[in-house]
Length: 295
Image (tube, rainbow, N blue to C red; front, side, top):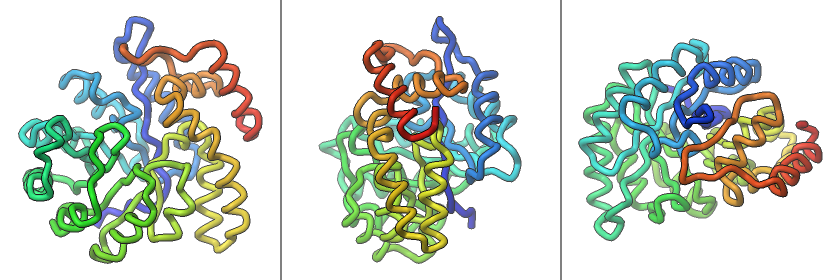
């Protein structure tokens, strides 16, 4: 089975000033981040603005990212769409482009009809059709639908569904899932803000937006935990919470891209309707980067 152990940054998708794809910049970012002991990369997750790209653009990003990602690092690809049919189509494109596994966000537009049975049928159909392993993605802040432990446990029974990225931050639910699923099912924290607590209830790593700009700090939390150095892990975890909140829940993708620009990576603009951060926010980000000894 593909191992998901470790830290994965969900890469932002670079655009130029006209909002066209800038995949050479993506390759540059991957090259720089590959210098760290990251397990791999997620391409076209929420931070990759998957929903703002055409099908042709998605496939181009998959292919060019795979060219840049070292062979010893895992490529995860976001392929969740609103219909099962479209999710399967994009999943096959990602697999043919070289993705090692796909991350599938649950459908949510008709959230009132997304029963446990509907979600199970959706994920089983995707897993049946997928040439590569499938990872469930629970992101209630974006979907407005928080899959419960019973639903995820039922979905995990499929042999081609190997793990979960949970960005909800409900640690009691994460622990319940870990206790209920097969020992082989792999749970990943979806935010650096609760990386250490997630590890203590059975997560084996994380897909963390913060790892794009603070890979060392995220890895310190993870590696200190593995070594049993809990005091060091706790201290580093507490230090990164404010910066993580700034580039996720508070100011989102535009702030993450601004922080990357400040650090010599390429962030660039987001696609509208996402707007760039203002000058005050830019200064606050700079201060947070300085406080964490990143800038």
